[in-house]
Length: 437
Image (cartoon, rainbow, N blue to C red; front, side, top):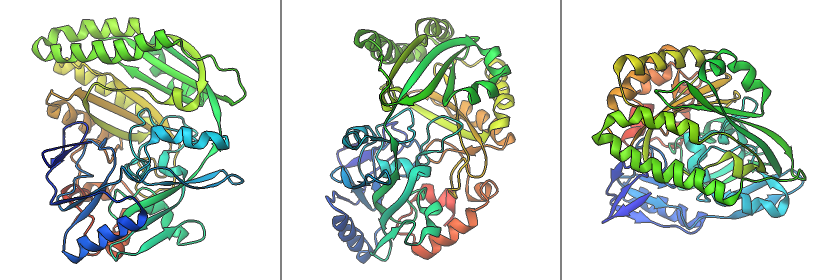
């Protein structure tokens, strides 16, 4: 997230706004005062985190709340392994906060720059068929509603609302703190390995079930899948991290530095994309290591891009992927970014992309200076034919009428929104599109 000359823009440069006013509260009470003031002046108000959503979900045309000063631990329940964090706490800072208590988050996405409130509100997830997304780890939260009051929701207070508010798109109120169910700190034994794509697709179910965490990347114009499989181990397991120099060469020099240059050059000479993709799969993705969970699950991504991701019933991942593969070949597109495939357990969050079903995710990307419209729209048609639900924080074209058919509890969420924010003080154009006015 950046602000230039009073204009806020997200990381991907796909959304921007010049808010009427910017507030930087330092406490939950400061948030309450900002909400109350906005209501008194008839202004809409929205909190923003790190700006890592590609959609306009965080766009705040009225009052923009920056929660950068609301980071850190509020409390720790060591016996139940629960921690409460201020809403603006960045994911990459959480491991150090949990370490003194021997705790870790159960699962993480592959990017950790987001705030905890933003991550749960947009449906951020990791990979692993036995693990839900970040919102599934939420056991309580506090938010300021459109009445200007604090509303605490946990197992003792309004517990029936937790599946709605833990992934609420920022439409129900401003979250000020989040309580997470953590697990004992652990390490991951990781194997990154290139495997023929055909083999991976043929026995994908077995590969997913054989590892705690499994995912693969496919660079178009190649026949190789870069697989990543990880096994959870006790924290006492001897760590064997990647060598510092080797990690820098792989993740900083090749995956970000050289890759940025190639992405830029491919705009002028698209023909360089296929040979570079073939080179990329020979230079990366072949290593074994053992390290702390958060160091394995997350990675640095500094090359700016735009992304669409759809959640499918796990059984539909392979046929959808094969159609996508055929589409790229048929259209003759030169796609510079890999396609990413991940998995998650079903959960009960009303607007979770994994609500009620074991889920596989297919994500497509384009370099941020490339117009992704034709590619993304064609991919979206395939995903919808296979029962796909779009990631709330990533680009898609669906509206409330279409989304209502995809979520069994959509109308229940809409009714709760009517109750908590009848005047739509927390709305914006994106939420009007996906939830209705």
